[in-house]
Image (cartoon, rainbow, N blue to C red; front, side, top):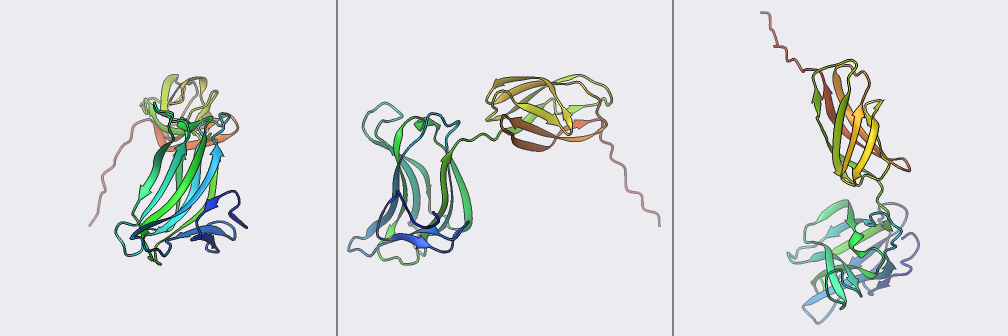
Length: 246
Protein backbone atom coordinates (compact mmCIF):
# COMPACT_ATOMS: atom_id res chain seq x y z
CA UNK A 1 0.00 0.00 0.00
CA UNK A 2 2.75 2.41 -1.03
CA UNK A 3 1.27 4.68 -3.68
CA UNK A 4 -2.43 3.77 -3.97
CA UNK A 5 -5.09 1.34 -2.79
CA UNK A 6 -5.09 -0.58 -6.07
CA UNK A 7 -7.30 -3.62 -6.41
CA UNK A 8 -9.43 -2.71 -3.39
CA UNK A 9 -13.09 -1.72 -3.25
CA UNK A 10 -13.39 1.15 -0.80
CA UNK A 11 -15.80 3.68 0.67
CA UNK A 12 -15.24 7.42 0.28
CA UNK A 13 -14.01 7.58 3.88
CA UNK A 14 -11.15 5.17 3.17
CA UNK A 15 -8.10 7.03 1.90
CA UNK A 16 -4.34 7.38 2.06
CA UNK A 17 -2.45 8.40 5.21
CA UNK A 18 1.26 9.22 5.48
CA UNK A 19 1.54 7.82 9.02
CA UNK A 20 2.60 4.39 7.73
CA UNK A 21 4.19 1.51 9.59
CA UNK A 22 6.66 0.76 6.83
CA UNK A 23 7.23 2.91 3.77
CA UNK A 24 5.51 6.16 2.91
CA UNK A 25 1.76 5.47 2.84
CA UNK A 26 -0.94 3.36 4.46
CA UNK A 27 -4.72 3.02 4.27
CA UNK A 28 -6.88 5.05 6.67
CA UNK A 29 -10.52 4.25 7.45
CA UNK A 30 -12.81 6.81 9.14
CA UNK A 31 -16.56 6.93 9.76
CA UNK A 32 -18.76 8.86 7.28
CA UNK A 33 -21.32 11.55 7.97
CA UNK A 34 -24.84 10.10 7.68
CA UNK A 35 -28.43 10.55 8.81
CA UNK A 36 -28.22 6.95 10.06
CA UNK A 37 -27.19 6.41 13.65
CA UNK A 38 -24.90 3.45 12.86
CA UNK A 39 -22.48 3.53 9.95
CA UNK A 40 -19.40 1.73 8.71
CA UNK A 41 -16.39 2.24 6.48
CA UNK A 42 -15.32 -0.72 4.35
CA UNK A 43 -12.16 -1.80 2.54
CA UNK A 44 -12.64 -5.00 0.51
CA UNK A 45 -10.79 -7.15 -2.00
CA UNK A 46 -11.61 -10.41 -3.78
CA UNK A 47 -8.74 -12.87 -3.71
CA UNK A 48 -7.88 -16.51 -4.30
CA UNK A 49 -6.36 -18.46 -1.45
CA UNK A 50 -4.04 -20.59 -3.57
CA UNK A 51 -3.97 -24.29 -2.78
CA UNK A 52 -0.21 -24.15 -3.43
CA UNK A 53 0.33 -22.13 -0.25
CA UNK A 54 1.49 -24.03 2.84
CA UNK A 55 -0.68 -22.99 5.78
CA UNK A 56 -1.95 -19.85 3.95
CA UNK A 57 -1.76 -16.93 6.34
CA UNK A 58 -3.20 -13.42 6.21
CA UNK A 59 -0.89 -10.87 7.84
CA UNK A 60 -1.16 -7.13 8.35
CA UNK A 61 -0.29 -4.23 10.64
CA UNK A 62 -3.01 -2.02 12.10
CA UNK A 63 -3.63 0.85 14.51
CA UNK A 64 -7.15 1.29 15.88
CA UNK A 65 -8.49 4.38 17.61
CA UNK A 66 -12.14 3.80 18.64
CA UNK A 67 -12.58 7.42 19.72
CA UNK A 68 -14.86 8.15 22.68
CA UNK A 69 -17.60 5.68 21.75
CA UNK A 70 -17.64 2.33 23.55
CA UNK A 71 -19.24 0.47 20.63
CA UNK A 72 -16.89 1.41 17.75
CA UNK A 73 -15.49 -1.82 16.32
CA UNK A 74 -12.70 -2.90 13.99
CA UNK A 75 -13.74 -6.07 12.17
CA UNK A 76 -11.91 -8.32 9.69
CA UNK A 77 -13.92 -10.98 7.86
CA UNK A 78 -13.94 -13.37 4.92
CA UNK A 79 -16.95 -14.06 2.73
CA UNK A 80 -16.78 -17.22 0.64
CA UNK A 81 -19.14 -18.13 -2.18
CA UNK A 82 -18.70 -21.74 -1.09
CA UNK A 83 -19.15 -22.31 2.62
CA UNK A 84 -16.47 -24.09 4.60
CA UNK A 85 -19.25 -25.75 6.61
CA UNK A 86 -22.30 -27.36 4.98
CA UNK A 87 -24.16 -24.73 2.94
CA UNK A 88 -23.38 -23.51 -0.57
CA UNK A 89 -24.70 -20.04 0.25
CA UNK A 90 -22.22 -17.20 0.73
CA UNK A 91 -20.87 -17.36 4.26
CA UNK A 92 -19.19 -14.54 6.18
CA UNK A 93 -16.71 -15.57 8.85
CA UNK A 94 -15.44 -12.98 11.31
CA UNK A 95 -11.68 -13.39 11.76
CA UNK A 96 -11.04 -10.47 14.11
CA UNK A 97 -13.46 -8.22 16.01
CA UNK A 98 -12.26 -5.76 18.62
CA UNK A 99 -13.27 -2.56 20.40
CA UNK A 100 -9.92 -2.23 22.17
CA UNK A 101 -7.67 0.66 21.17
CA UNK A 102 -4.21 -0.13 19.81
CA UNK A 103 -2.30 3.17 19.83
CA UNK A 104 0.86 1.43 18.61
CA UNK A 105 1.15 -0.56 15.39
CA UNK A 106 -0.04 -4.13 16.02
CA UNK A 107 0.90 -7.17 13.91
CA UNK A 108 -1.95 -9.60 13.25
CA UNK A 109 -1.95 -13.01 11.56
CA UNK A 110 -4.86 -15.32 10.68
CA UNK A 111 -4.66 -18.91 9.43
CA UNK A 112 -6.72 -19.24 6.20
CA UNK A 113 -6.20 -22.98 5.70
CA UNK A 114 -9.98 -23.58 5.80
CA UNK A 115 -10.29 -21.47 2.64
CA UNK A 116 -7.42 -23.08 0.71
CA UNK A 117 -8.23 -23.21 -3.01
CA UNK A 118 -11.25 -20.88 -2.66
CA UNK A 119 -12.13 -17.40 -3.91
CA UNK A 120 -13.08 -15.12 -1.02
CA UNK A 121 -13.86 -11.48 -0.26
CA UNK A 122 -11.51 -10.09 2.39
CA UNK A 123 -13.17 -7.20 4.25
CA UNK A 124 -11.79 -4.68 6.74
CA UNK A 125 -14.60 -2.79 8.45
CA UNK A 126 -14.80 0.14 10.87
CA UNK A 127 -18.27 0.27 12.44
CA UNK A 128 -19.65 2.89 14.81
CA UNK A 129 -21.67 6.10 15.16
CA UNK A 130 -22.12 8.52 12.25
CA UNK A 131 -20.00 11.63 12.33
CA UNK A 132 -17.49 10.32 14.86
CA UNK A 133 -14.49 12.12 13.39
CA UNK A 134 -12.10 10.71 15.99
CA UNK A 135 -12.48 6.98 15.27
CA UNK A 136 -10.09 5.58 12.69
CA UNK A 137 -8.15 2.51 11.60
CA UNK A 138 -4.77 2.58 9.87
CA UNK A 139 -3.75 -0.48 7.81
CA UNK A 140 -0.39 -1.38 6.29
CA UNK A 141 1.59 -4.32 4.88
CA UNK A 142 -1.46 -6.50 4.10
CA UNK A 143 -0.25 -9.81 2.68
CA UNK A 144 -1.29 -13.41 2.02
CA UNK A 145 1.41 -16.08 1.91
CA UNK A 146 2.71 -19.40 3.19
CA UNK A 147 3.53 -19.90 6.85
CA UNK A 148 6.76 -21.92 6.92
CA UNK A 149 8.27 -21.02 10.28
CA UNK A 150 8.23 -23.86 12.85
CA UNK A 151 7.10 -23.26 16.42
CA UNK A 152 8.85 -25.61 18.87
CA UNK A 153 6.96 -25.58 22.16
CA UNK A 154 8.53 -28.30 24.32
CA UNK A 155 11.04 -31.15 24.35
CA UNK A 156 10.69 -34.39 26.32
CA UNK A 157 12.65 -35.29 28.31
CA UNK A 158 13.77 -31.74 29.00
CA UNK A 159 16.47 -32.79 31.50
CA UNK A 160 19.19 -35.45 31.81
CA UNK A 161 21.49 -35.83 34.81
CA UNK A 162 24.48 -37.26 32.96
CA UNK A 163 26.99 -35.23 31.01
CA UNK A 164 29.60 -36.46 28.55
CA UNK A 165 28.83 -39.12 25.91
CA UNK A 166 25.17 -40.09 26.02
CA UNK A 167 22.36 -41.31 23.78
CA UNK A 168 18.92 -39.85 24.38
CA UNK A 169 15.77 -40.13 22.28
CA UNK A 170 13.64 -37.02 22.53
CA UNK A 171 10.27 -35.88 21.23
CA UNK A 172 9.59 -32.29 20.28
CA UNK A 173 6.08 -30.89 20.24
CA UNK A 174 4.92 -27.68 18.63
CA UNK A 175 3.38 -26.39 15.41
CA UNK A 176 4.10 -26.23 11.70
CA UNK A 177 6.91 -28.78 11.43
CA UNK A 178 7.62 -29.46 7.73
CA UNK A 179 9.29 -32.67 6.55
CA UNK A 180 12.27 -33.01 6.76
CA UNK A 181 13.11 -30.77 9.74
CA UNK A 182 16.57 -30.27 11.27
CA UNK A 183 16.95 -30.11 15.06
CA UNK A 184 19.70 -28.64 17.24
CA UNK A 185 20.31 -28.44 20.98
CA UNK A 186 22.76 -25.60 21.25
CA UNK A 187 25.38 -26.34 18.59
CA UNK A 188 24.69 -30.10 18.70
CA UNK A 189 22.69 -31.42 15.74
CA UNK A 190 20.37 -34.32 16.52
CA UNK A 191 20.30 -37.46 14.38
CA UNK A 192 17.57 -39.92 13.32
CA UNK A 193 15.07 -37.07 13.04
CA UNK A 194 11.58 -38.36 12.20
CA UNK A 195 8.74 -36.04 11.18
CA UNK A 196 5.82 -37.68 12.99
CA UNK A 197 3.36 -34.91 12.12
CA UNK A 198 3.16 -31.14 11.79
CA UNK A 199 3.03 -31.05 15.60
CA UNK A 200 5.54 -33.77 16.60
CA UNK A 201 9.18 -34.68 15.88
CA UNK A 202 11.31 -37.46 17.33
CA UNK A 203 15.11 -37.41 17.26
CA UNK A 204 18.21 -38.87 18.90
CA UNK A 205 20.97 -37.03 20.71
CA UNK A 206 24.23 -38.98 20.37
CA UNK A 207 27.00 -36.59 21.32
CA UNK A 208 28.82 -35.38 24.37
CA UNK A 209 27.27 -32.40 26.12
CA UNK A 210 28.71 -30.50 29.05
CA UNK A 211 26.45 -29.58 31.95
CA UNK A 212 24.54 -26.54 30.78
CA UNK A 213 21.17 -25.18 29.67
CA UNK A 214 20.64 -25.47 25.91
CA UNK A 215 18.36 -23.74 23.44
CA UNK A 216 16.20 -25.91 21.15
CA UNK A 217 16.30 -24.88 17.48
CA UNK A 218 14.12 -26.38 14.74
CA UNK A 219 14.70 -25.59 11.08
CA UNK A 220 12.22 -26.32 8.29
CA UNK A 221 13.26 -26.80 4.65
CA UNK A 222 14.22 -23.49 3.11
CA UNK A 223 15.99 -22.28 6.24
CA UNK A 224 12.89 -21.21 8.19
CA UNK A 225 14.01 -21.41 11.82
CA UNK A 226 12.66 -20.86 15.30
CA UNK A 227 14.26 -21.27 18.72
CA UNK A 228 12.92 -22.26 22.13
CA UNK A 229 15.22 -20.70 24.68
CA UNK A 230 16.59 -22.70 27.66
CA UNK A 231 14.61 -25.79 26.64
CA UNK A 232 17.02 -28.62 27.57
CA UNK A 233 19.06 -29.09 30.75
CA UNK A 234 22.13 -31.32 31.18
CA UNK A 235 23.43 -32.00 34.70
CA UNK A 236 22.12 -30.95 38.07
CA UNK A 237 21.62 -27.44 39.27
CA UNK A 238 23.19 -26.69 42.65
CA UNK A 239 22.13 -23.69 44.67
CA UNK A 240 24.79 -22.34 46.98
CA UNK A 241 23.90 -20.33 50.07
CA UNK A 242 24.96 -16.74 50.33
CA UNK A 243 27.41 -16.36 53.17
CA UNK A 244 27.86 -12.97 54.76
CA UNK A 245 30.81 -12.27 56.96
CA UNK A 246 30.38 -9.53 59.53
